[in-house]
Structures are given as structure tokens and as C-alpha cells.
Length: 138
Image 1 (spheres, one colour):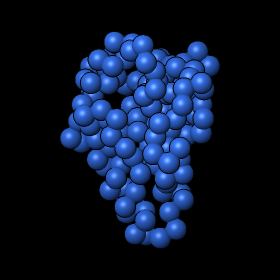
Image 2: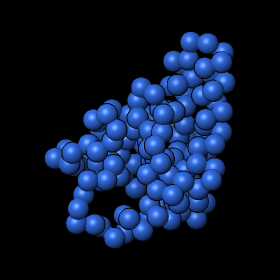
Image 3: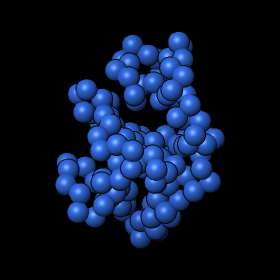
């Protein structure tokens, strides 16, 4: 992961509504409209009990955000401590769904540029408003 986040300083959509987090984004003095842990901060603020706040903190100790999106509301991709890549959306960021078993699978998928673009990652990485949402409940 360190090599990946160190390989670029800016990697975003042309409208800058979707971006991969770079090594600089994770530094404590990084400037920007969004913190690398923005979703965690929003969830902590929304927690109404100490138990909810603890559950939020526990979730984010196991998940490292790698991509943030504000294109269609707040969304993220994160790498879980077992290497899986998960996708989460507002308002319940912690109800994340595994989209790839390993971070390397995400990179291979992006590199392959599949002709069929109906994966949740395609909605995030490409201006894909015409791509149907195939996530549960949509």
C-alpha cells in the first residue's frame, strides 16, 4: 500500500469529485477540503451514544480509506486489515460491502478496463451515471 499511495500526488476524476488518497493526504498536516478519514469523522459526529462511537472507531481501526467520492453523495473504498477492498456509502459508512478480495484485484480490474461496466467501482471511477446501481437495495 505504501508504494501505491507514494506513486502519485494527485489521482482524481476530471471534475475532482472522486479521488484516490495519496501519501500526502494521510500526513497530519495535509491541507484539503476533506480529511483522509472524513467518513470516520462524520460517523463519530453522528453517533448518539458512546457505544455507537466505540463501534465506529472499532470499524475504522480495521479499514484504511483509499478512495473518496462526493459525486453522488459520500462514498469510499477502503482496504480492510485482511486485504479486502470494501465499498461504503453515506449515511451508514460502516455498512461496507466487499468489492474485491485483495487490493491487487482492484488494480488489475482497473487496468483491464472491462467492456462491461456495471461494477460499483465503475460508478466511482468513471462518470457513469448511465451505469445501473447493482448494489443491494438499489
